[in-house]
Length: 381
Picture 1 (tube, helix red, strand yellow):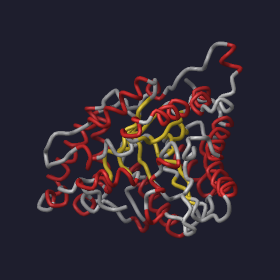
Picture 2 (picture 1 turned 60 degrees about the horizontal axis):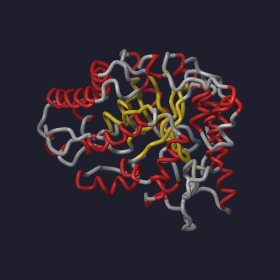
Picture 3 (picture 1 turned 60 degrees about the vertical axis):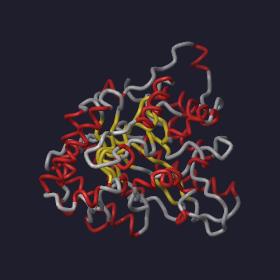
Picture 4 (picture 1 turned 90 degrees about the horizontal axis):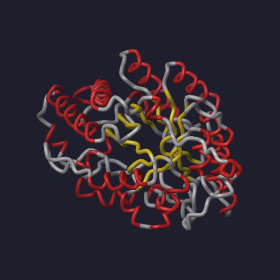
């Protein structure tokens, strides 16, 4: 998944790009009636009720087009107290020409659904190398670092101001580094180094101080050389940014997991300890499980996926500073892993990465989420 071209938005939508204040962070209050207290949210097929009872966020990424299907709307109502537009807030989608108007029509559709169903909304993403519009490379080619920074600042301020008071979190900077401290943004990095991240967080804080500001990253928690190198780069980046006083409030772990590799549990716990020790919140932002590394029947594959997801969720949700979990697609049929050619299983069978199956029935991953939420300590309202 590399350049996002403007004339390629519809295709990339199919690929499922992977994909504030204390008051703003509160979710629905505990049910007060005795009848509600006796209900079993898991038996009722509702992650939302379970998450609400713990003061946690639970949700998923969604495309505006998904909301046209009543069965998906029903699953969202059952599982989610928060939604994130999958592509509809990304730069390549909202700005079609240099300096041109911003188009939030598709994201507004998701926002209306969220409001109508008493759900919160996350913003994703203000600054991501893989969501830049097709015109950006040529437009910025002859711009100085200052001119580039001025444009990015204006853009981020306009977007965050448009959604001010309507989103509870922003992925301000998304997936910034690879291994060996390589900045992945080939547009901003060569001109500004990692200082574009300082600018992005500062601008987001100014435009919408009530939205929690998140640094979001992927593929850093599992035992494989690539992820270990990227993990080390991420640790060093966070240290640099925090030492500079960059206005980060939360670390978002995307949680794109692969059954082909183990979970670096001890190393990850030390990382979470360090993050929370710096005063940062935690959020699991894009959970799914690539099961291409597991052979066998569906039941076995689902068990392996659920065990891996459960280990990560149990650890992270045990931290009071962890605010909740979002999957990247409510069901297998909505997952980018079904559409990305490089993620296909060798046996030709479809991936099963999401909490619900193609018929929107809860799977073992769904049960793992429910169990981890059930075991998590309640968060203060």
